[in-house]
Length: 88
Image (cartoon, rainbow, N blue to C red):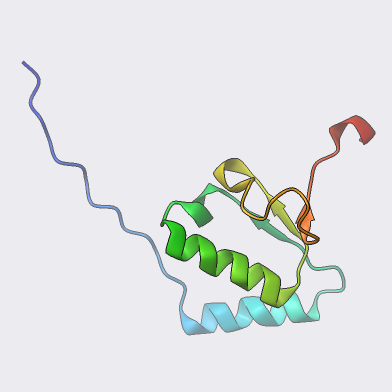
């Protein structure tokens, strides 16, 4: 018989205020900014997912979505960058 073990605790690192300010400064100063979001932006649930969508829209930065967050902005969102492999 297999022994049941509780799941290990998960530690999700949080950025410092300085890290967030620096990231915003980099985005503001970029000539052609783009954000790349992956599965991590949806693993915290609906509350965080909504915050990510809000941040993308407030920043107005074109965003590439990968992994589990590919549907985050919807197909026709103006900031959603989609892959066009057949045109590559």
